[in-house]
Structures are given as C-alpha cells and as structure tokens.
Amino acid sequence: MKFSIDTADKPFLKIAMKQEPALAKEVIKTFAYLMNEAFDPKKGVRWVDLPKEFDKNLSFEELVQGTLRGMLDVQQINPEAYDALLAEVHPMSLMMPRKSPLDDVARLYDWRRHFGLPSDVAVNGETIATILRRILRYAKYIKMEDLQQALEYNQVASFRGLGSEQIKKMPFYPALRYQREKFGELHVGKFFDDIGFFDCGKHSSSECPACQKELVDVNEKYKGCMYCNAGFLKE
Image (cartoon, rainbow, N blue to C red):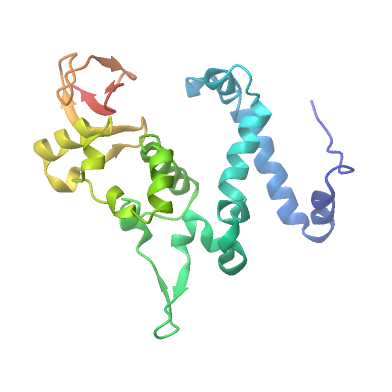
C-alpha cells in the first residue's frame, strides 16, 4: 500500500519540498520508518499502546506530539532565555563548541563525561537516545514541585551531590548505596542501559539486596527491583 501526503495544511513542509528537497525527503523517510516501529511487538509495550498505559484519555497523537515538542521546541524549553541563547537552551547544547568570554576561543565541553558516557562514544542516534534515557530516569525520582521552589528561592545547593540529604530521601537511594558499598564510588549511578535499571552486578536470590524487596524478572538476562530500581544480571 502506498500513501500520498497532502501539503495543503502543511505549508512549511511544502516550502521545504521546493527549497530543501533532500532534507524534506529525509524528514518524511524518518517519520515513515517510525510509523512502522510504533507497531513493533518486540518492544514489549508497543508505542501505539503506551498512551493508554499512562492514562485512558491520552491519545497516541498527544503522546507523540508532546514528546517531540517537549524535546525539540527549544524556544519553549526556556522562553525567557531563548532570544539570547537560541539552541543553547537545549540540554544537548552541551555538545556544541562554546566561546569563552575570557579569550573568545571556542571549546568543546566534556559532555561525554557529563552524561556518564565512554570518552570515545560517537555522536549518533543511539548516543542521543542513551542521554535522553538517563535524563528521564533521573528526573523520574525528582519531585518537580520541590525543585521549582528551590530554583525560585535560589536553593539549588540542596539538590547537589549524591551524598546529600535530598538523595537519601529518594526511592532509588538504596540502589546507589548498594553500588557504592559493593563496587566503590566510581560505579555509583551506572545503568544497565538496555533495561533502565541501576547496574548492581550479579545476584541469584529473589530478594533485592539493596532494599530487601522482591525482585522481578525483567527478561531472560536481568532481574530488577521495582522499588529502588536496582538491576541484576542473573547468575
């Protein structure tokens, strides 16, 4: 089956198809591929089924639009700073060369270390996906109301450091504590990127050694704790 695209209600795409045909073709090809991936049953929960998992009134269109606009509409990420900073308001702007006000020389920020990635990792789709997964995973455990109040009252220091009292109150703290005790400081915060749980090594019993809750089978390779997000390789 083939389908056509009506550009009558898509004026910017219509202009792009005339002025930037190669780029327009790339965008259309990308979204066409993602349409197929949305129905992939191997993802466990298909993308098309995700909205109803979150809320019965949420549609697939709203979920996808909200996700893409939330990540790509940089003007809306920080409207007050956008006019001056433009794309630099986006978290991915750490990958851009920046000029120092001291010597006006453009330098790259060590964004790989910032996001906990190998020093030789390439900039590609999987790298972007890994960064966003890590941002979202950590954000899951931060109470946005408290963070907003801290920002408003200039108390950001209360959210700094893994050893802070704030971290100790978060549900994933037992997993971080276990990582520190078992493997040392350099291992704290490491993920099994393919499942989204903290890398806590191997474990054989059905009880989480970090928080003493019951572990569940994530897949044939991993077990995970739904309480503190500790993940374990099956022995």
